[in-house]
Image (cartoon, rainbow, N blue to C red; front, side):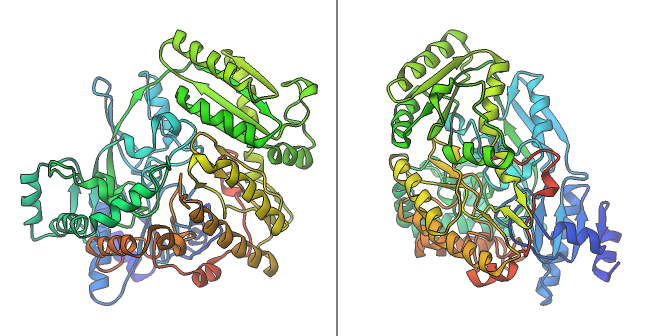
Length: 549
């Protein structure tokens, strides 16, 4: 064990590891990038994390930076869960439910808690957190907050941001703060503190004042987007009455502003019974027209897969996923739409589902309406079949998460889907498309071989053109996840120079020594991405759960 590891081990209650195999494991996350860390720390308490942060701060003051990267299960596809310094892994010890108040529908948890474990506990009390990501079976609460995650039910219920009430956060110098709404008078007191917390409040107040026009213009220009995780949610921190809440600032910050150590979440009433409509379309434009009308019915889920998904499964596995579900006369549709309603009252659910079924009949070639849970599971298996694409490997070729998770204004969805297909043709890659049709949040994974120089170059060119195309559509290059490292070079292009500078100044105020996840969300170039790119890619570490999107 090296000197740094020995020093930390003697000062914290948790564990410190510096073995080659452990570091190699933590050098990768769910992205195509790889960075070898210096050591891995498994903290037991907030006090452990406070000491780790203080230690890194003191090293940086002496000119010896030691970056800190907080990590859950490492599912992040943007390269935000890897770093060259200390990996702070919360899954070993900081993974408990600390308190549950069923009357107020509040639950206090630690960041390393498995999302599925929390949901299963809440289900027994008739509650749930609606904005769970597709990989909630094996991802963590901390990761979901760090990315402002969303998922299948976010069309109705919003992103993770809507369900975070308060946070406990360790700042870059080791200070521990509690976030929550404070009055205008309390804000003035906070701004007077001679601490990093005081500096943070001063920075938030000053930056919003100095850049309010640019921040408002950006928000207005992207108001049509239902999901947008680029940058920081700075504008949401100050209310019109002068009150302030720093909670939104840390949600979606990917560990770059502070380290979240405790969370109070707001749960919702859970309705286990749903009504479902599944429809097939022989034309993408017809599907988009149906989506435009269906959104007004407020379904909890409005998902899609295109013909590329159906064809991929048939070619790769020799299975026709439509067999025994739709009549043979339907043939192979260009798209399938999944519409689900979870309203508490059964008669309202049925009424909305019947209206949806009638509505899609104007556009669809066939539709199925069902209340039966077993039949619904079979129908959802069509949507879940995309996991076979995410997990695909053939030789050293694999499906790469490089042009997924972008969102455009819903009015431009049909045009966007057509442009993705054209891009696939241009770069000679087959692109199966799926995603959240109601949000216009789309996923697609090109299959390329990173061991080949030509494919690595093609991957970079494809990503560059795709992300610029999304920005040109008035969309966001980060919808369910964040820009991380992979999309960081394009963040300023989407936000504009002034907004990007405001966020850079915010980050400097929070982390003057650049210790917290440097290179994530900003300050990573395309040249650096090339040097960090793996020569192989695999999702083998996640196959116990079959990766899902």
